[in-house]
Amino acid sequence: MAITDPLFGIQEPALQVQRRRLELIAANIANADTPGFEARDVDFRSVLAQAQTQLDKANAHNGKLIASTNSNLVADTQPIWRLATQPSEDGNTVDTQVEQAQFADAALRYQASLNFIDGRVKSLLSAITGQ
Image (cartoon, rainbow, N blue to C red; front, side, top):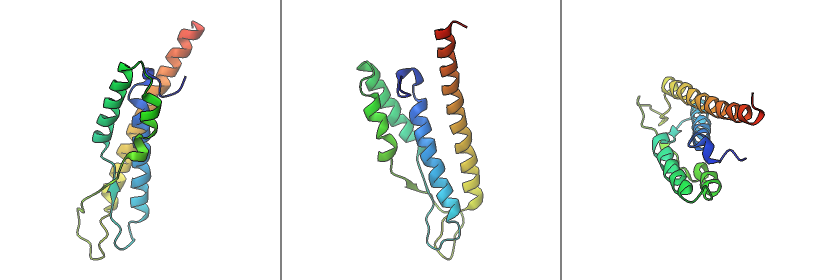
């Protein structure tokens, strides 16, 4: 059973998007002192809404579209430029405090999705083994 099974619902694409967010935020923090670097992020809500729409369509077709639609979700996601909260003379838009807070938020959401999937897997194993 693939993780893209309807049993896991929106959690699989949520993991993908949060992983992408964590990568972008880590790059922002790493480039905090790079002149002209512009902070980037992913609009999590819009991407997840798109994933939910695709998931609903796939469920209407007995789950046949899920693997193909979710596999391209993160690859097709375009990062957005984060607006500068503090002006910088060198054109860098990274605010390390904002980035660290965003990273912590994304990490918590990623862990929550993992916990949900782990709970589903444990429930399945319990049902299969009868324990």
